Image (cartoon, rainbow, N blue to C red; front, top):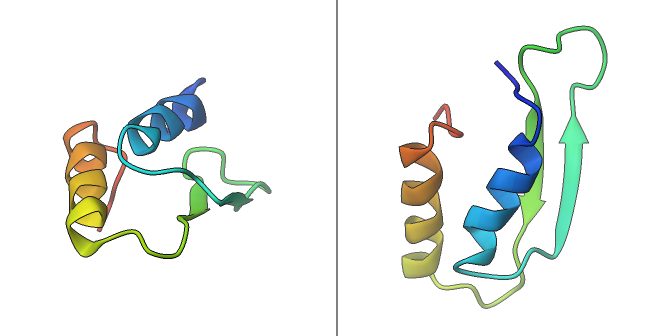
Length: 65
């Protein structure tokens, strides 16, 4: 379920490791229980950094991969 402040929490987690180049919110129509975000990181972010971000987001249950 989407909770108020989720985008801010996700941004805070990602910004610990890298800058955010762009954010796009998808699925803003009917189903408010699930929102998808497309977050673009700058070119040059290493795979190691990306894996750290994914791990941090998974710990907070923001990823459903």
